[in-house]
Image 1: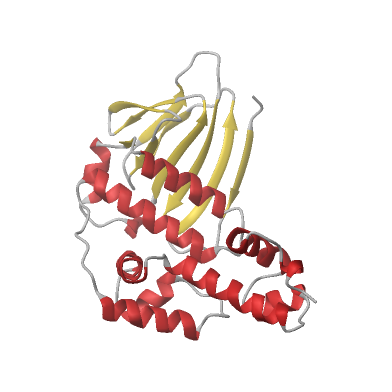
Image 2: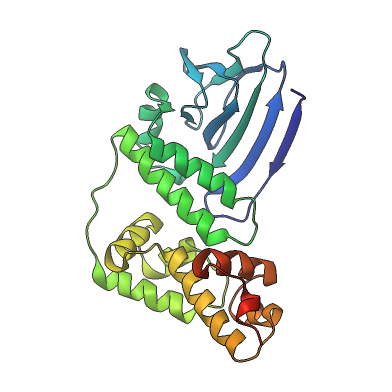
Length: 258
């Protein structure tokens, strides 16, 4: 295991920083963060103290560290390092009661939470999948709130879902975020995702992608080359179109091109 660190700031609402690191011997002294920290261990294990209580982070869980609470970290296995992926999320990512609850319950073992974090890291590899990454942040938020016992009850809001759908249709070819839609519609992004999914049976980002693929398919059948069809359908480039085209339609844009 060779020490390595990679960090970047994705253009995704609520996500301040992403860190991928491998450490053979490094041990973190006690420190604090301004942000929420979501830790995923890929290899090895980490022993840490959070607010003077001992905990372990392993690949079978995710670890949630609240803002402003002291913690340290070191390998929990003698002679073996650890490999980790970390999300640093805005301080207001969770509501006010959450930091106190997280300080006593930082370990989350629900499969849904772990899957959400893994999916989020996978989506964050692509700078053009902003809404998909944003959706995964909101999915993770709901899992965390459930774990902490502070989840809000879901209610159907068909008029709001319809307004969001109209907004998505109007801005189909633009790059924008659920956070922007939430500000425009006067609702929290998590609530927007819930009511839209309840009303239409699909998440907003998948609705947008499906509409764009459908548009690209028609443009291809009309004689537009794949590279041009991609741009005119709202995709970043032909590779971006091809990835989603194959996922949704099971084939490449070239099959529909003249």
